[in-house]
Length: 116
Image (tube, rainbow, N blue to C red):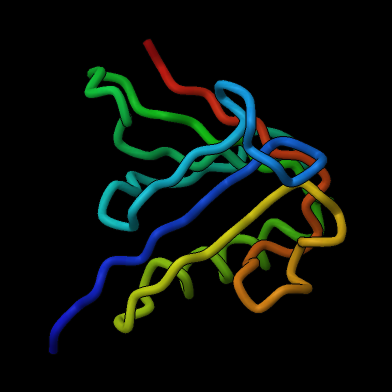
């Protein structure tokens, strides 16, 4: 079975426009390292660093605590899609799970950190 890469775009700008340094990040599924719950309403996604540093990039997704399982299920579906695709996630409330290209529901905030 052939496999096409999935790409995930995260945007922390409430206006859904990545126009400032650090506002947005694009990762491919093969750069996904893992995820862990880091707070009552926060899940940290780890990706291979975009700048080649030894440490990983972090995408902290804040959502209601009841949505953690749903977030993990949706993330798994995105990462395992054999057809490939482009998925968008923003903390802009109108974009969370309502567009065909959005994937994480119940998000109230996203913070992207590229490690130095």
